[in-house]
Amino acid sequence: MSKLTGTHSEASEIDFTTLTTVPGTLKVHGAPIQILDLPGIIEGANDGRGRGRQVIAVARTCNLIFIVLDVLKPLGDKKLIETELEGFGIRLNKQPPNIVVRKKDRGGIAITNTVPLTNIDHDEIKAILSEYRINNADVAIRQPDATADDLVDVIEGNRVYIPALYVLNKVRSCFIDMSARLDTRPD
Image 1 (tube, helix red, strand yellow):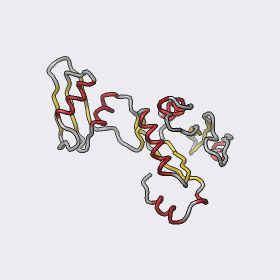
Image 2: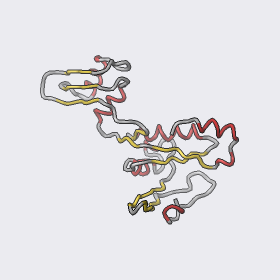
Image 3: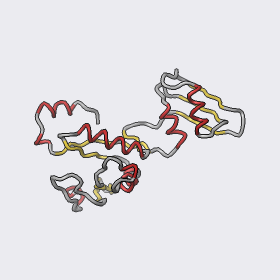
Image 4: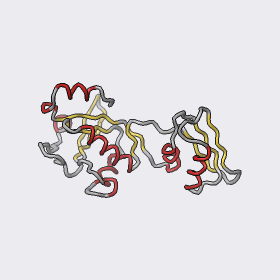
């Protein structure tokens, strides 16, 4: 980031070097692009541990997230970060569910689906709506692999869907065969 934006962002061999958000701006074909170096996310961040809520709140506003992982433990760290972000309503590399829930004044629950439902059934949909005290609504599902979590995301309405790229650092310290295995991972 220091080389891209001219802003000084501390870097060292230890984890969690960045303690506060460090903003920088990069110009690409005359258009300014803001880059933020955020502090690391620790386990329990979504529950308020450390500065987790502040960091995640800033991440919710981003258009793209680069997640820098230690090459010696990338998959464990990746899972931890994804879990913390999911808990705060950030969905990485996912599309919003193709589900519409339209509340109405009366008439009960009407469910239509244009594709076969494989992960959720009508009774489960009604039970979820009941949990949210929705007794009258039209529900349209146009996604074949829709899940209960997808329906909850639509009902909650406060989820953000952000593309993410995973970047590995300290690659000189890994073996070639490990590098080849990691190269086959998505994103």
